[in-house]
Image (cartoon, rainbow, N blue to C red):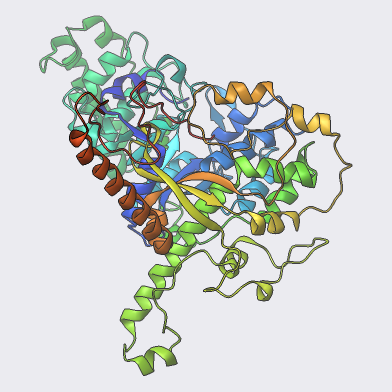
Length: 592
């Protein structure tokens, strides 16, 4: 979608990034807005388009949207979905656009709200609104496969990673190990498009390419003007002068400017005086229409309808607080309502793999935010012991993931369910008898995350199970055991060290795990260290003892009797790494 071929022009400026690394380092760690996440905007209409390819089961389109939301929550991204508004263009890509809302809108909004994501309706086109929100700093980037975001003025675009979209299959994004892990994307920044010596395109430049080559509002463009010629003219500066004039001149003044502007373009086509269009193009100079560009199409790009043009500049900065969390009961309730596998046992079984890891990450993020607030409060009030006690901040550094906090943020007290979840019944913050995170087992730096340190956590999901079960009303009949096995997901309890482990599991049927049984998941170490310092300290101490033991064995080896078997020196590896001398360490798969 958008200007055909423009991604190929911009490709040299793209930078391959892991979604996890981007969200963790520039969102959670950098923490520019105090929300411990990376804020991304998403055009809902693009997700509607891709959801149409869903073919499996009951409500296949909503199923696709549901699992994409699950995938989106595996990293500390803070999504804002924007829907097209009533003033969007009536014609796009040669087709008349209906003024009615898309039939998936209600279901998608229900899913978005259950996951704790944000959504808004734009005055006009969603992608124009997202570009505006990106420019004023409401969102950090736009997640999209539509290049038109740059025509509307976006500052950073994360190109959708799916290999089935917009020609991505011909150019798969691979990690440092040369694998397509589904977690790597190409990130484009407007500043890089301008500074890259092979591109040197501004917003005005990409608008000119869209007008000459053809885009969503006029697909034909100018006959005989390919994207390379258009890019050359853009680098000559004709797009910049066009953008400036369209923003500063009235509509009545534009025709006079455009007459002179067209003459300048024709002269450059005839002479190639700046040497940026390859060769002289006298025939194309004669073909340039007298009515180019169409003023309505030009203004659709340069002055689109957004909150800014509607007299609400900056309003959205206060409308999005990024403070919502997934409501487990509501997510389970939607699964029961929309999907054929929506019975309690199967919902919980699926949640073990597709939801619990993401929920644990969100719980860690929420705990980090609460800790930030406690630290800030301790600085802004008197710090004598008496005043600390009076203001209720005697234990400012209290951290962790207590059950009371989980119930407060991840369950709805107003949920109409057969069961009720009462926050007052939760354990005390400091004395959870059944903690969520039990232990750190190992660590790794994996290619799928661009090498950020991760911990292998043992998690007790009992409370997550209870909160989710509270949303299931029992409106569907039970599913036979055979059906469960046929549609089962990976349990996620086993270590994923072996590349062939998934193949071996597929051959053997086994009963579903007990819902409350512990699971093991990988989680960014920086989040765990901040929230669970006692667990990380215990893990570090174990690693230090193992290291000392290995060093002791290494120093003792040379003192063995002559003729004895001598061990080869080897680098000390983490618990999660292979120390075998027979084969190189195998890369661990990332649970999808």
